[in-house]
Image: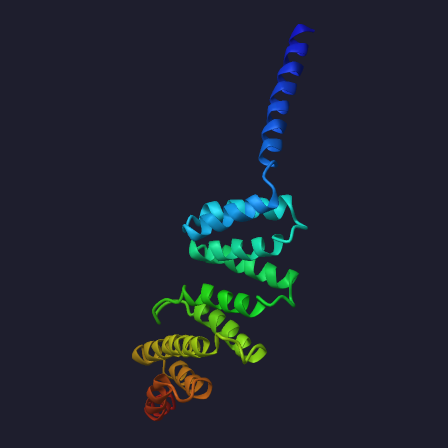
Length: 215
């Protein structure tokens, strides 16, 4: 009986301490957490910024700072180069606030998350394709946005990477004498990436590759 009473008292004591700690943390109001997050962000302490803004969002979801907190969490993750998590946070923001003035910015940031992961042409072109899709969407839905010039330049880089990857694959097939496979790739590049250096290179290869493929 004494042992049972001891453990019950011990459990109550531990639980009480836990509750006390949580309530002391909650003493920070929304304004304080917003200021804390802003200060950490300005000092490039992005992990601390995520913590402060997450607490703000969780503890005060109806605060006037809550929407800002959602966006700044995504921004902090972006600067931490945690791009997968940043994409999720940005997409969640757009889903929850589709008419917010920050939506063009959010779309551009998602594009940049993928853009910053673009690798050499011999690697997976998925990041370039994802980035291209978001940048094109931004131009289509918000043609007058301030990101227009930068977005146009980024689109060219994405296309160059994707077309470069396609050409490298086509050339690989050609070198290994898989001429029919190479021909399909060359024709694909000419059709979908006209005007690029890669399409010119592919166009020059098509006659010879066609002849070899038909032998």
